[in-house]
Image (cartoon, helix red, strand yellow):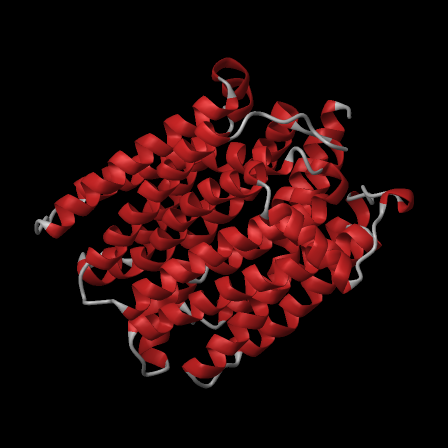
Length: 400
C-alpha cells in the first residue's frame, strides 16, 4: 500500500476507533456534574461507565464473526446507527438508571468500531507492518484522549454535560461518512466464512484453547485493565480528592494519553530491534513495578499529587510498549478468522476491564486505595502472564 494510502487508511481507522474513545474521554470530566444533576453518588455514576464497558465486551463477540461472514463495512454501519440512537437517549436521560441503560446501548454500538478495525488491519498486514499501521491509527485516535477531556471539561464547566452526547452524535455521523467514502471493503467475498452458531462456537473454542492466542490477549487485557481503572477512578481522585478543576483534569488526562500514544509510535522499530516478546516483557515488568510502588505510597497515606501523576505517567509509558504488540501477537496466526479473533480478543480485554472497574465501584471508600490497589493487581497479573507465555509457547508463523 502506498504511503499516502496507508496514512489515509490509518486516519479512517483511528477516527473509527475513536468513536468509542470519545464516548469515554469526553464523558469522564462530567462525573461530578452528573452526580449533582441526577442526585446520585459518584460511585453510582461510575456504573454508567461500567455498563458501557460491559456492552463493548459483549457486542464484539457478535460483530466479529458477523464481519467474517458478511464483510467488514455493513456491521460498522449498524454499530454507528445504534450508537447515535443511544446517544440521543443519554442526552435526555431523566435519571441515573436511564443513563446507565443508554450508556449500555451506546457501548453496544461502539463495539463495532472497537473490534472491526483490528480485523481490517489483520486482513492486510502482520508483524511490524501491522504495528506500523496500528501506530499510525493511534495518531488519529489521539485526537480523542488529547482533546476530548479538555472539550468535555469545557462543556461541563460552561454549559451542560448533556451537550456531550450531542457532540458525540455529530462526530459519529461524520465518521460514518468517512467510512462510506474512504474505507474500502478489505474482506473479499471468496474469503468469507459461515456465521452459523455452531461454526461460531467452534471458532471461539479453537481460539480459547490456543495458548499462543489466549496468553497474549490476557497480557494486553490486564494491561488495558490498568488503563480503564485509571479512566474510571481518576476523575474522583483528581477532581474530588485533590480539587483539580475539570479543565485542568482534562489537561492532565491528555498528558497521559500523549505518553501512551507517543511511545506506541516506536513499537514497530522496537519490535524489530528487541524482538516482540522482549518488548512486551519489558513493558509488563516496568508497569508492574510502577503500579506496586504507587499502591504502596497511597496505602501508606501519601497526600501529594505529583508522585501520583509521575507514577501513573510511568504506567502509561510502559503500557504503550506492550498493549499493541501483545494484541497483534495474538492475532497474527489467525488471519483466516481475523474477525472472530479480534472479537474474542478485544471482548476478553474489555471483560477484564469491566470486572475491574465494577469492583472498584463496589469497593469505593472515598480514597484512592481501591483504584491503586486494583491497578497493582492487574499490572502484576500482566507480567505473570507474560512469564507463562514465554515459558510455554514458541513463536508461530501466520496462518492466512
